[in-house]
Amino acid sequence: MKFREPLPDGCPPDIAEEIDEPRDVFRLVRTNPPTEFDFRSQRAEKPDRAFPDECQARGLSVHSERRDSEKALRLPTLRGRLVCRLRLGHGAGEILQTGRYSHHTWWPLADYDVLEKCTVETI
Image (cartoon, rainbow, N blue to C red; front, side, top):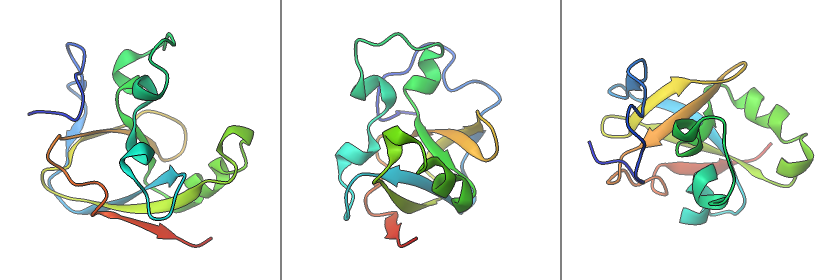
C-alpha cells in the first residue's frame, strides 16, 4: 500500500484495520470547502516537533462519533473549526482507535480523494 506520506517501519500498526466497508468519520477542518491543507498530518504541520508516537503523528485524527468532534471544538486550539463528514470506503487506507471516546488515527492511501469524500456540516 502507498500511503499519503512516508510512514516509519511498523506503521500503521498490525492491529490497525484496513477500511473495506463504507463508514463515516468526522474531522475538524479550517475552511468550507475544505482544502488539502485541512488534511495535513501533525508531522506535516509541525515538522520540527518531537511527537511521542511518530506513527500517529503521520496519520489524520478523526472521530467515529460526530459529538466527539463537536466536543473537541471547545478546545482553544480548535475553536472556529468546522465539522467535516468523511465517507470512507474501500481504498481509504487503515484506521485504529487511538484515543479516548471515538478518536481514531486514519492513515489514508495516496490515491484516496479526501476532498471528494468530505462534506462540511452545520452544527
